[in-house]
Image (cartoon, rainbow, N blue to C red; front, side):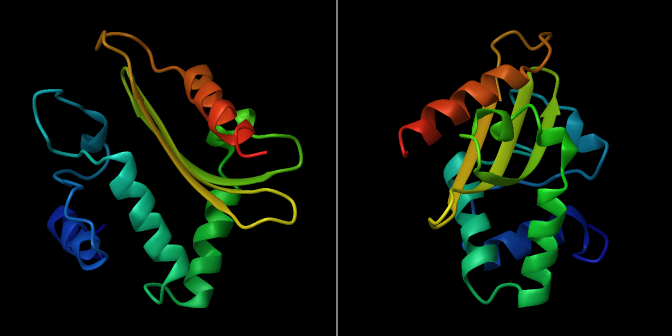
Length: 150
């Protein structure tokens, strides 16, 4: 985050990729404190997926940086109970999860055998802000979406 110039630098970099939706106000661990009435530290599935598409399918990253990003996401053990759990057997999943309170999210590159990758962003939030986040909910959404593509 420092190399990008903090939250404002990250927001500017996202804007350069065409993402004017995502609002970045904090760094870790402040990103984990969520106020439902505040748009700070928010995005949409469409914006997140479009940004991931830009990073993976355009010249926004070098080939080495793109490979590093996918390597990091492939080794993300916190995603085992999320999109990876909902993906059909044999499909590769590279993901980055997040969560705070009642919010649980996962963004993934899902690659079916012999087919082009699928970009998937799942953002969930329970209505009760005191509730714990729900990995199984993310896995069920992933399973529903991905099995429809089989």
